[in-house]
Length: 384
Image (tube, rainbow, N blue to C red; front, side, top):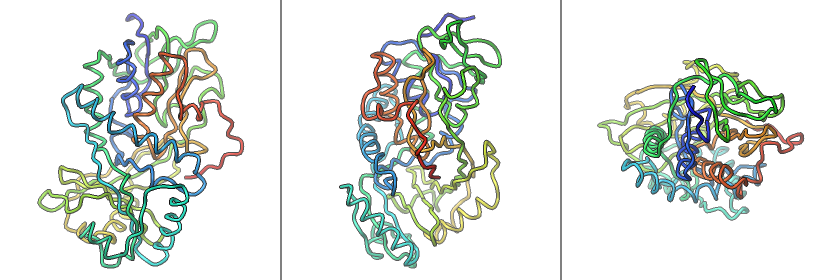
């Protein structure tokens, strides 16, 4: 059995990797336990950073968290790039939201009124103004809105950079699957049990396994918050000649259905995403792929000429109130960071900083201190 690291982390997705990197910056020794760091939902995601677009009816309380999270991104990306010498994939590009028919446009107008009431930066666009910003849009588009503060990060570029940043910071990776939390006679968390043995934690255990977090055994019922897996299909395409013909993210309503197209600097375009309650099933299904492509081509007819690269499906960690769970549990030594749902990449830097702060000072800083692991959820609505 190896000697104990200060912090042992279950989960090498974007939250686990970023937390490991930030914690290591504070001088603690860290081990990340995951069969394939950087894969899972982090590999599937589109990487949208959308504090304005994600401000929706009934979630007013999350707006300040989203805005604070977005504000962390430029500094986080700069520090990671300085530490690794690698691009992080962060791009300030803005989002154009469009509606395909009159009812879609009406929904966008209602959402804009809501966003303006919250003081968010968003402006109405006519159909011609939408096409001036994104010339490949369909002539059928009826208008939309511009969210200049919504940006993106290339998810796969970012997780590669985080793995390297962790390695340079002295983080150790263990390629095992976590089975359970190990506890001592007092019930305190002292490490992790994997399929191949025990891993000892000198001070703290962090569960950051996304939608898989509730499947980790070894703790009393109710300690792990009520996370549910929400399946999402994503399609990746490559534009003609490998050059993406637009720079803004396009988010569209297509007869009431949501669709987005996220352009990458390498000429690929990420199209997504479905939202399905299917438990832990991640099979790529033809019907879901067809629906995404059909909606995408109605927004951008040129999609018909693009190369089909791949389709993947992953599991978002949904929570009853769509807010994350970050902080200590009633099991001494056990910390949780999960439940980020649609906004895992947006909330990555602020979550990692909060975890590192807690592990070194004993306190979760604002604004994430408003979302403790043991918060009352009896009256929360489940919004998928």
